[in-house]
Image (cartoon, rainbow, N blue to C red):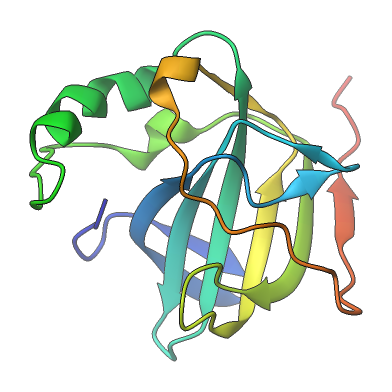
Length: 156
């Protein structure tokens, strides 16, 4: 899904990144403690200087995901052509989490652009087997990259 300008933003290390598009991969391209998940959603953000940050949301098999359910019928009818979805608010994806992983890596699709800041949310969403396809890149070696875990203290 492509987003028009001013659809959403995130601020990372003092820089503003604007939401440009989102897409899914199945099974997941990231693993946590060796576990591969059913699917992964990427929210791609780009700053004015061209730098990129991606928020990744992982999915396990379970109940159908309401967002995917909203999109399924339109996408299935127009597999090869662009589909106009209409109003969609990125807030529908929010899941409060105090835990996320971050590292600098590359895109998983050609040209595999480097220096992408990845943030993988620690809270996993649910998706049904019927909602999952197969379009992932195999898991890649770390190649010396450092993955950091951030975890906020729970609020009492």
